[in-house]
Amino acid sequence: MFLLVAVAAVWAPGTARAAVPLAHCGQTVGLECATVTVPLDRSGATPGTIGLHVEMLPSTGRNARGVMFLIAGGPGQGSAGSFGLTTPDAAAQMQQTFPGYTLVAFDNRGTGQSGLINCPTLQSKLEGTAEDFAAVAAGCASSIGPTRQFYATRDHAEDIESVRTALDLGRIGLYGVSYGTKLALAYALAHPGGVDRMILDSTVPTTLPDAFDANVLRQMPGTLRAFCAGGLCRRATRDFAGDVARLANKLEAKPARGVVIAPGGGRKTTRMNGEDLVGLVVDSDLSPGLAVELPAAVHAALGGQTRPLLRLLDLDRRLSELTAEDLSIGLNAATNCADGRFPWSPDTPVSSRRAAIDAAIAALPSGSFGPFGKWAARLGTAFFCEQWPSPSGRTPLGNGPLPNVPVLVLSGGYDLRTPTESGAAVAQLFPQGKLVVVPGVGHSVLGADITGCAQNAVQQWLAGGAVRAACPRVPPFVKVLGAFPKPRVARAAATTASVAGKALRESEASWIQSLFAFSGEPLNPAGVYGGKLSLGKNLTFTLARYSDTPGVAITGKVSAVPGGLPLKFAGTIRVTGASASAGTLRITGNRLVGTLGGRKVSVPF
Image (tube, rainbow, N blue to C red; front, side):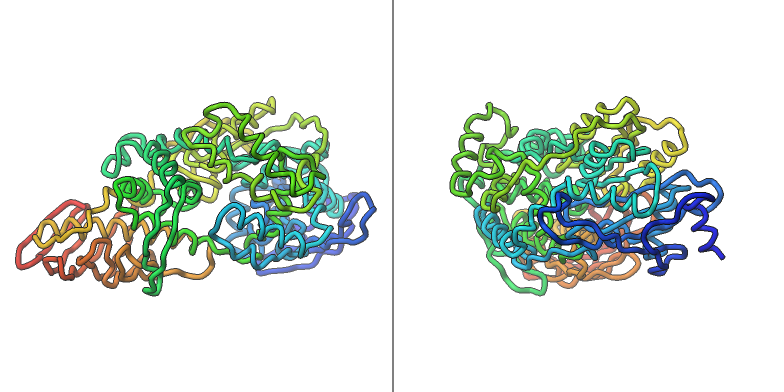
């Protein structure tokens, strides 16, 4: 009975039913799925079709407001798979965010259940030079074949229109995240009459990404300074932004190399150059644990103590491993290499592109890359797509004009990959554009803001209410680390307690980093000098001889205490090691209290 009522809410009396058959799917009541077949090449010159997996969840209640398409990012994330409407809890969350809306999500061509592109070598590649990545990307292009040119943003935008038409829908709302915002804007340019309103979360303008990531690099220092505002990083460094710039330029001239302890206890030699560091910093806008540990690790590396930072790089890479079903790197390459505004024409042969890149970089004015040298241009898509077969780049989007519709732009104050500047610029393109900034939150605002401020803004805006320009600053999940202790002997009880407290704080950051991992597999990280952190249930983790300083290790079970941010913790740890005053410490508020080496201690941590 519920299903019949829900379907009636979508197809009002006298309205033609969808042109494609829909059938119940997943565990969510009322969810229906269909396959919408679209041409591979809409010009008709190349034969073939792609079946797009589409999911639709009708609105509940009597106050139906319209239809909202949910568009994931990447490019490479299938929207149906990413938003998880087949799962009741995820579906309920989206219905709460967009009350009264029928929700539609489909896997973009080349993702999820819509003709997934899977290039295993590229998918699993997490380290190497820009040339290494370009060569592997070219191999992926060869495996896809000539049809790789039909995965541009223009093609994805036309697929939205095909799904809208196949479901017999009128004007639609568009909720895009990251690259999904660029796709939403591309659809609005191609089909302005089909748009009812847009919500853009972590915005990518249609002119981006920059071929050299220059906009990201210029904005990075200001974003890092904002993160540390109010003395948040004072125990680690006085100038986090300056530390990052100085260390990145230093590492590009002379990369760091050292041994790290891998999860499971193995030893691995890890190398880091300037590009690696900047990439690691950018990754922190999706990893709250990485964000709170970076200021201390970067500052320690500037002083010659590189092991904590090398460990973070290795851990970040391991936690970033994704399956093609999660995010197709092959589709990511195909779309970015079709779209990019590169310093060459689409048919320029590969052999001539490096000269075009070098000339374009040389012509850029001083300061184009912020405080970083011109080497930082290698982070952009121009180097990644240099060996992508022709045609490559500059696939046009629709001519517009953009529709004059309500637009809400959400931006995280700690968003390093899609800085607030980009969101503000897009909001200004629309007479009805509104920008809401959430300080302290990174990329993908609605998913990262656990305070609910961003979600409330969306709900108020959808209901026609006013929204404020900024939310209160969201504190970090755990405290920002203080300076890493020097790797020296620490026999005195008070000194041991202080070192143990620093290790405990660092373990909290590693725990959060593991919780927010992209990888679906749990990862139990090692400390800087060994041991293991094991994730438990109900916000707990266990430490087994976890060590961030040679000769001092901590063991015990730690639990997060429900409440505000930063999180507080409870538990008891045993301190051991050749350089430690052995004993037991109990977490009491922000202090460690107990007995070490037969002496009572009480120290802040």
